[in-house]
Image (cartoon, rainbow, N blue to C red; front, side, top):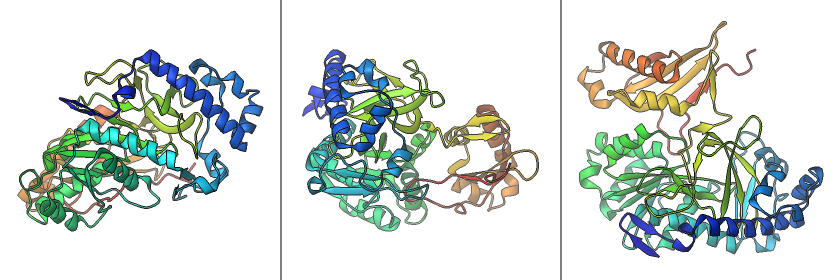
Amino acid sequence: MKRREDGWIFEPEYETMTREKLCSLQEERLRKIVRHCFERIPFYKQKFKDACVTPDDIRTLDDLKKIPLTTKEDLRKAYPFGMLAADISAVLELHASSGTTGHPTTCAYTKQDLEVWSKVMARIYASAGTKKGDIVQNAYGYGLFTGGLGFHYGALEVGAAILPISAGQTERQLRLAKELGTTILTCTPTYAAHLGEYALEKLKIDPKKELKWRIGLFGAEAWSEELRHRIEELLGLEAFDVYGLSEIIGPGVSAECPQHSGLHIYEDHFLAEIINPSTGEPVREGEVGELVLTTLTRETTPQLRFRTGDLTKLVTEECECGRTIARMDRVIGRADDMLKVRGVKFWPSTVEHALLAVDGSSQNYEIIVDRPEELDIMTLRVEPKKELFEKVGGDLSKLKWLQEEISNSVKSVVTVKAQVELVPYGSLPRFLGKAKRVRDLRKGKS
């Protein structure tokens, strides 16, 4: 490991290699993983046959486009073991999706896969400045969801202590944080904000003064820069964005460094492309599109050109932190989560951006879209900040100015007028995992 003023670079031989050497390594690993998939997974063998492609046709990174795209529906159809590229006797860990939007998907890990997962997660911790002596409070859910165990393995790999408390038990989370002096918090950004509010309101604990959290590693949901500022103000830590998905490895695909100028993708393990989600064609560097990932070292459930559904953009210029690996922007939303209201398309995170730009609004909100007659109607239910709510004695009629400011902000950013409804502070649900902010009541309507 190499110590830098702005954090650790856990594996500098990979994270700072020249683009020329990185591309050479990627091509070598691409050829190997393509043949591995072709020989061991009937799904890919048939895909290649249908596309009139053989492993010998994939020699360079330019040949990547010859490989057909893989979708989540492909993985669902292959459930449970149709995408397994290793003998089941070599598998040490299994995870599965909930299947709430269709058939479940399976991801499996051999010893080698777990070692890779541990190392890419260690890179994330190191990048944020984690060191021996730190105590990680891991408030991601353990179990079939990959978040909890991914952050667990990475902490052990980097040499930090781990408090495997999992999600929930908010009061206990805060009491243990104070009693044990945990220094790093890992959870969803929504839950991080909830922890800050709960500490101040319920336990009368000021996290900035009474807790030792200095680093927060937050992911598993799209979030805005404004929410980052709210969390940092509430908790007194530095918040880092983390990205990953179970189909690829779990958390560990990319993460921010202290420059906060994008999330470094660990390109020696994950080959990234950006495509037009409608046409499947590549877009130019710096343009927004759908992230497509190929696993270069995944032994058990490898993926070739997997469509993540996540919208972002890539840059390959060297970062000031010294890393030469590409950076992706914070995910702005999912291609299938985009809302269309009165002909205007936008992502829920755009609404959050506009909402939190208004002083007086909290980060607790809900978007409701309906079509009672001919036209779409978007209602934005928002809680005012607690101190503001208490200042007016709970009389929301005194906050019409806040309604107007939120409405104007949303209209200026999203270009769609929202009916803003202020609701009592504490009345909207809080989320332990991924937040569910949108209710689209138009489903099933023509």
